[in-house]
Length: 167
Image 1 (cartoon, helix red, strand yellow):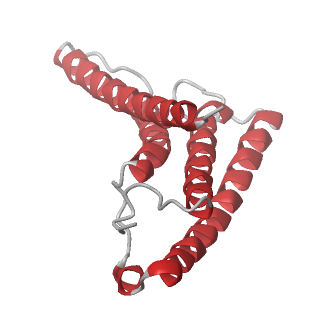
Image 2 (tube, rainbow, N blue to C red):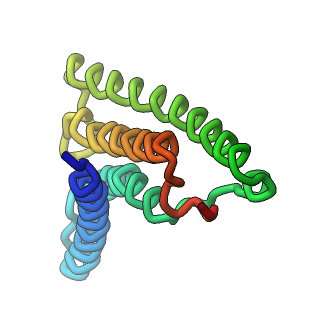
Image 3 (cartoon, helix red, strand yellow):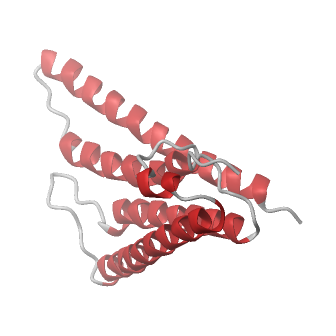
């Protein structure tokens, strides 16, 4: 079974969720502006906008990485050729995988801790904090999958997409 279509759909799905978060931010701010014309204040708009902004940021990471949207420092790697180039790219991916795996683990632990202590936001509308934090953890975990995906491609003899390198 080829996991490529499933992985690509996962990255795209995360990107759509990130886009939906941006749309929700826009709609909430627009609603707040219109409501103020009539002397009405919508409570916790700023809190929810912040939650959606964090969710959009983390959910967009995997798709942006897989489509080449992240800035990649390839000066050294471009100077190398053949096996040395692949080794340098592999080393960079391994370091990045370790960093994001560490971040993913602690983001998931953070969500669990917020859930177990029943922490809520301090705005007008108390929101259980594990809910917005879950999107951060989910985005980091899918980002970790995207990095592992590139590393597996590299090990299989293919250069990952959008590295800026030539086969």
